[in-house]
Length: 116
Image (cartoon, rainbow, N blue to C red; front, side):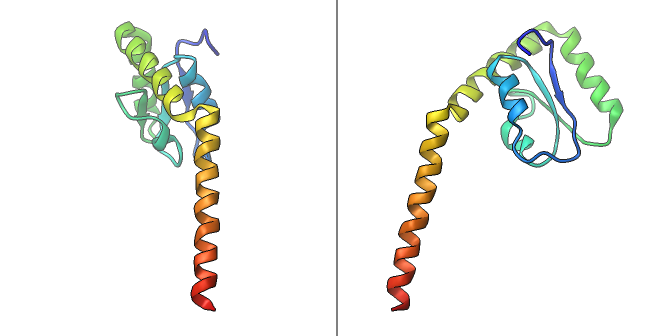
């Protein structure tokens, strides 16, 4: 994947977008459909391109842009690597999940006290 010119995820539905995160972390510019988790990962024009699903002509134009505009592809790839590193480092994700569980436990204990 590291040698890809760009990575395209043009699916009808996507739950998490792990392949997109992998491409971003490798500095590969990405094109995604404006669906589900993908729009939470990719910021249009900042770290990738987000296009409407069901518009193949827009997809073709986006691919052509990345194939012909080396500066855009480089800028999106660098920003994508930075975003993926900042947002999806394993420890950071684990810490965030641990924080969510801790809050859930605290809330559950609080609700039990109120109910008593």
